Length: 242
Ligand code: 6GU
Image 1 (tube, protein in one colour):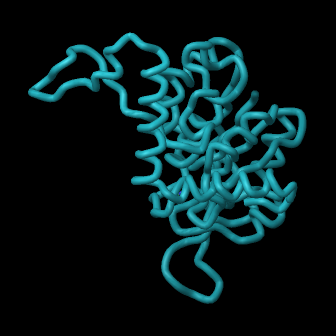
Image 2 (cartoon, helix red, strand yellow; image 1 turned 180 degrees about the horizontal axis):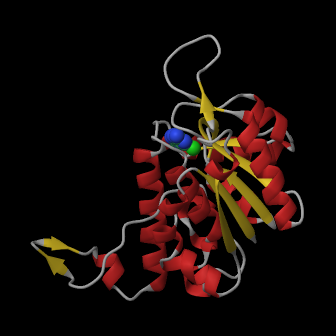
């Protein structure tokens, strides 16, 4: 997979892309990252990329011109059109399913949104999908882009080893993970659950399944509702599920 990232702050990415799974994925040749400085496509001697909003109001708005020119140049260099993502708190929420969909693409172009906002004709004219990483506002789209990249790259085939397979990710099942314990069996008066020390695989599996259900019900009942809706849609053969 080739990932192009268009940003005003390309320097923010090196430390994140250069460690852990993202680094290993590049070394394995599973993914390559190309960073592009939006400033290079700015207007005039000051290379402006934003301007005051029509209709007034605070802040500055990312202009169409620099972004369209950059996207055209990037895709020309990359040799074709990518699936285009624009980071935005107004976007569709990043979920496991969306990450899985993006992981299936050969090429991604992530445009980092601006603190204040962007001209609406950017997502419209470029056919870029707006994606949010949660219901809070970040100062810029860069951290969101890194979150998207991390979630997507670990789901691309051949990146994770077998024992850390993403099939077992809690959200792959639409449920939360179960509690984990390691040595020692007792710490500061707190004991690891007896079932996990039993050596009885069936009992361990049963304990984990029960904890998964309990945690999900207590902390994220919305996930259980979603699973229930999917189950109903499957049973009734409807295609208009969630
Ligand atoms: Cl994608 N961008 C910004 N600026 N803030 C966010 C976000 C994205 N997702 C959640 N908050």
